[in-house]
Length: 257
Ligand SMILES: Nc1ncnc2c1ncn2[C@@H]1O[C@H](COP(=O)(O)OP(=O)(O)OP(=O)(O)O)[C@@H](O)[C@H]1O
Image (cartoon, rainbow, N blue to C red; front, side, top):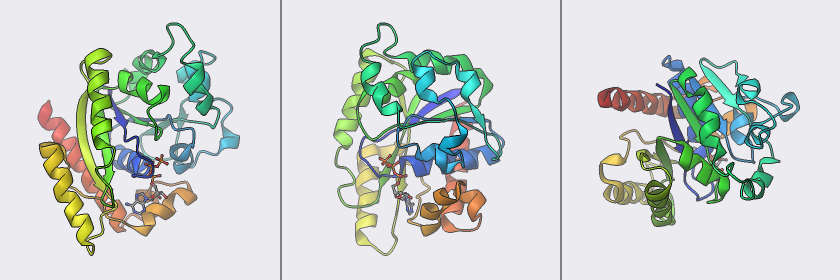
């Protein structure tokens, strides 16, 4: 099947990487083969799966520049059904380098088309910006999964985000859809969190997942152990939420088919 999904919100620190790593890991545990593409130069998805910078000679950067074949760079992780196309800080340079390259501006689509039949899902972690890397992702994908934090100014930037999606859909990728909106960092004790849930549901109507990811310290700790939370502390609230979200994700996908 090979559905390609961008985890996208140009706002920083909303839980893109946390959602990418943990949702992928939980979907992998449900038996689906996943490729996770780390397109964020910060490389937190790469390290979140325990891949150390010293252990990778080449990254998605070399693939984007046509120096390496994607199939030679993908890393098989120790986690069930999870493969990673790693990132590096050099990737920040690609924002400029891709702009000047004739016919290679949107090269990510061709790269992922080469491997998409080998996976059930490909998730891309986008950087917190609207540069060439993000636009490359939006051109390459079937859909966009949007994490939103249940905190102050949650909807700030959302109209810009939706504007970007519409623009790409009109001009570059007509099949682009919203996969779903994930509410994250929910604090049940805070009225604000409850208000944000209501506002986001009103804005996105039926596209918001029923499962809400709580603020959970284990989710913040797991990356420093190089593990998705389900492998770090399978019983914590974060693990339960991402497992439930993975089940909801698959149920909705299988309903569509
Ligand atoms: N549900 C959660 N509970 C507790 N901490 C969380 C949760 N989700 C994310 N965090 C923490 O919040 C911070 C930002 O999350 P994350 O890195 O996933 O966001 P991001 O949108 O990918 O950031 P960036 O825009 O910098 O790429 C991280 O330190 C992460 O560990």
